[in-house]
Image 1 (cartoon, rainbow, N blue to C red):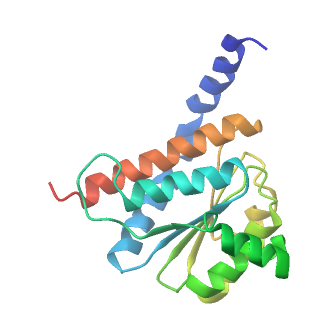
Image 2: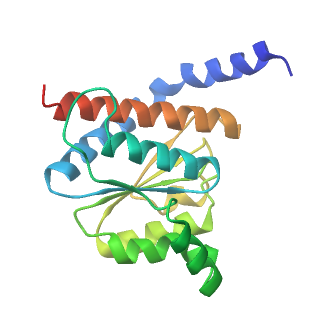
Length: 187
């Protein structure tokens, strides 16, 4: 495939993002409300979605652009000791659930990232967070998979190609960081 073909597929996906703008703006409002109430933001996902989870949690804790107080965001994908101990002693399928049970509270917001919407460990952790009473969002591709019927809210990127979905997810995450900078800046 040519570079221009890949760029065209990327552009087609991004040209359709206004279709989900209302959902993304609703999520921004809920994130701001979560922080205002003293809650934390949790991210989780596998593979590229794990990397996005880490990336976005860092943007919230450290800063995006504006000088502002650190915001409590946690990627459940980063503690290699927890990930390996739990996977060895129990199962990788429940590696996020165990962390949600230990760390999540009703005032928190959980974002499960799964391009297919069918990642079992994300699905189970969303269910665990709902039992606790936390707000739960899923970020998926256009199909939404099983998470459509499980998460409280969903952002379905209008694309089926994994790379295009992931590109949109990180763009959405960056915009959320930018919006929190605007809403919570100390300048």
